[in-house]
Every structure is written in structure tokens, then in C-alpha cells.
Length: 242
Image (cartoon, rainbow, N blue to C red; front, side, top):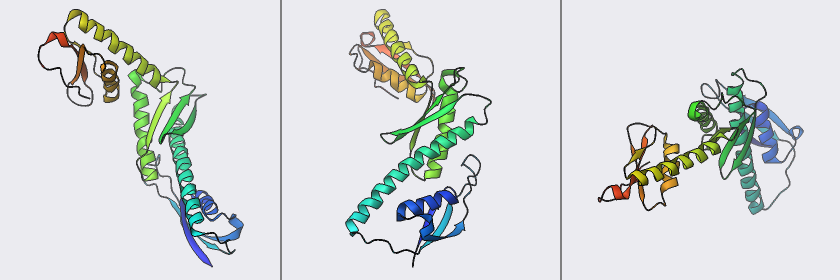
């Protein structure tokens, strides 16, 4: 009789992991609960995984070691990706459940290693907030929960009603207009205070314009982007900063 130990966010999740990894039904092995799982507060404080020990009562079919290694690696990859998406989705749904809003739902998917969560049904913009600050706060909290739960670095993006794309389009158009103004008046112009992500969009929007240079100005996370026409000064073009 062989014994194995498995973990999960709760007892049932650990048992399901055992079934998948051993390719057995739960009736084909004995289960011992070593430690029950606890989600804690939003998955941030006091959370712990469930741990079980299973004893296999039915002999497994023998497979070549190479096939076993490939199967286990593939299963681990798939289960890890699916688990990450599920943890992120559940974390955001738990937070949204505390907000008195009806008709909202979360769509989750993983693309190129990044977990994308899109909130649908927020027609009021309450979850976006001024300049996306509420959305950024939600994204920060969910990232903390997911990275703590998975015990590895995973990027999570939270969006609502396609706000992120609309914001990017707005910043690009703003940068182009301000660039044209700087060239016309031959003087530097400055944006409002922007976070690092928004500043990067402005820098990239003007990167290929040979008549302009950009640099960040300010202290802390929020800074302005200064757009400088190169005819304004004979000195070396300013170095771009984030």
C-alpha cells in the first residue's frame, strides 16, 4: 500500500487534486485529513491550505517513467493555471459581494501568463472611480491575494466595461495633441499628474516623433510628463524617464 500527501484550498479541493494526480476515483483510496483548510480574511490573513494523506488500495497500472513525467508535468501546468484563475476570480467576487451593487459579474481568463478579470454590469462607473483609481485599488488587493495564495508571482489585471482600453486611447490622443501644441508654440508643455502606467503610455505615444522629447517630473508615484520640442533648446534631447 502506497501513501501520498496532497494540498488544496479546502478538503474537497485536496481530494480532487489527489484524484487528478493519481488518476483514481475517491473510492479507490483511503483518505486521512491531516490539516483542514482555512480561507482567512479575504485570503490575506490567517489562511492556510488543507492537507490530506491518501492510501492507495488499488494497484496502479505501470507506465514508462518518461510517460509518467510528461503526464505529471502537463497536469501540474494545467491545474496551476486553472487554480490561479479560480483564486483570482473568487477573490474579486468576494470583494464585490461587500459592495451594494446588483447585476455585476466577473469574467476570468488567462492570456500569456496574465490573469485578466473583467467586471461586467458596472454601468455607473462606481467600480472604476476617478481616473480608474478604484479599479487600481481592486487590482492591487486581488494581486496581493493571488500571489499569497499561489506562493508565486502572478500578474492580475482588473478591468471594468473596457475602461483600460478607453483610458489608453484617451491618453494617446491627449499626448499627440499636446505634442502638436509644443511644436507649434516651441515651448514645453506638461500633462497633469499621472501614475507610472499612464506616463508610459504618453512616452510611447511620442517616442517616434523626432521633433519631440519627453521626461518625467515630480516626486513619488504620481508625476507629470514634460513634452519638449527639440527646437526649443540646442542642448541634448532630454532622456525619457518613466
